[in-house]
Length: 368
Image 1 (cartoon, helix red, strand yellow):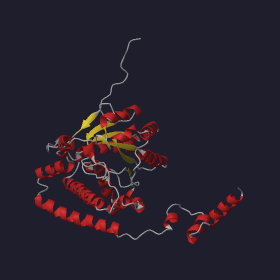
Image 2 (cartoon, rainbow, N blue to C red; image 1 turned 45 degrees about the horizontal axis):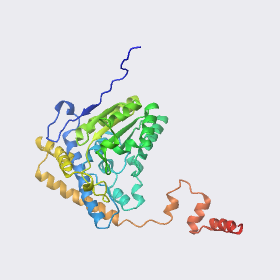
Image 3 (cartoon, rainbow, N blue to C red; image 1 turned 30 degrees about the vertical axis):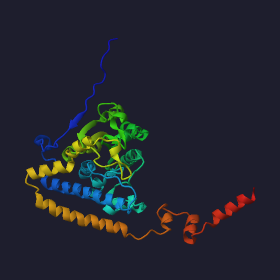
Image 4 (cartoon, helix red, strand yellow; image 1 turned 135 degrees about the horizontal axis):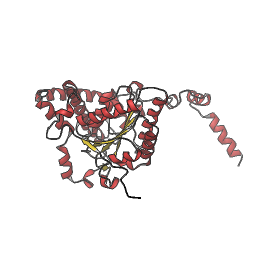
């Protein structure tokens, strides 16, 4: 039998607003109204300022470690902007901008990195899951949430975020395979920032794109300029529509860059060339969005100064709320672990003693 081709692959890359301010009027037509792009820029700027403040909090011993978001603000924000309020936003730990757009208070993020688990108690109306530090686990959670919604006949979809390094984890492959085979409405957003802590992307994936990893599971895949808020909105909007109408997953590779260290416990100068960082600073999503707004007479220096003052007040207030929060009660360990507290644990909570455990320990000792 002759040799014949049975599969030809193509990955499209979407860019609408580049780092030079060039804007594709055709692709971007009607995508984001002028009033909304101003709000999105302010949201990114607010997230960036929180990064600055959080860095100082950590360096002054008022916070543990902290992963700065700077450079990657457009990705999660675009998703939060496109998705319905009751769609699940399943993040890892560099999606503050999207969470804030959803309404998650800044102090929740600060509390988490201060070691207070109350920061992870995301209120139900936000439909956001707690920060996921383990690499890749949240992709399974997103797939499960979307599957549950489909099973119940609900309209919610799920959108999850992860890094390029996470696609080397088994969790990604299990989630992708499950979602594609069972037609689950989930959007996989890979933030390819070229570094999995100190491991370069070329070691994580030898293929030309990370996006094509999704093709193996039979799902539509696309690559976008992750520092272009318009391109990110374009891709997520298309993926969300597919999830709702066809109950099909999509893999989006958002090419971006982590401008800071992996966390405040890291020193990226030990493994990254400064020349590389300098190139990506010119591709900053905030810089190009501001250029676009200025070109359309939507923004100027006075508006920038006024916005900065508002942001400083808001962030400083969030820091005060996080540092002045009343200490948790010991009983919270019981009250917030179980939906219905078993009688024996209720007794332990009320008495603050473990009588039953002590008696069992005595029996074991006497038996030896």
